[in-house]
Length: 280
Image 1 (tube, rainbow, N blue to C red):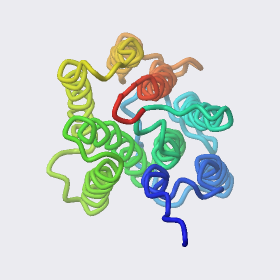
Image 2: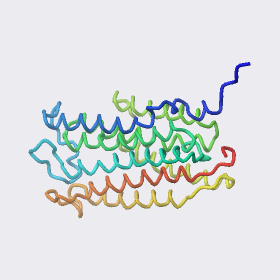
Image 3: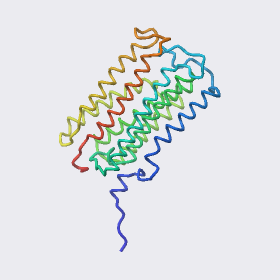
């Protein structure tokens, strides 16, 4: 008699058991950074419109228009690849996490890839100063923030892994298509600033609603604290701000990038710390 398929394993993997899946963020980082370097060397397509000019750093004549604000985005690539490595160590040690992101190679890989893409996405704007670069920057932000919101909704209202994936596809798909088609009801940056506190509020609801699920909230607090410090620096280092020094090699906006990268890594550690008895 033929053995029945391991349905639980299929649901947990959701495509993530493919051997190439954990390498996807590495491939994304390599390809996107390679494309960036090639375009910088051969010349940026499109017209220079000064995109990113509101973030203080003076535009240079070279291939990379805002060096500090551009290269600081490598922090996101490092953070995303660190997430992949941390998830990989769990798999090698056969650590069975009792949370969705820890049990699903697909979700951990998706989160890592979204963090990685934040780097090249922002680099496209600060490196080129073009309108399409600015759109790529906002797109990477919206695709990323859709994950924490969808993941929080799935855990708050139930439905498990499948619900989380479909929620993310729906939210990220709507945001991405609306941005690219110019039909977003508000600017992409405005939506991002609304979705960040929405994510934080959902996580707090989760914490106080279900005491049976243990979480190391200090990691969420660290992520939030670092982000708030970064936000203050971001605001004060706008063009004309008290921390704006256009010709300096150290830019406040670059520090914003690096601190936000730290925050994305802390959010993943928070996700991994969750212990849901139903998934044990």
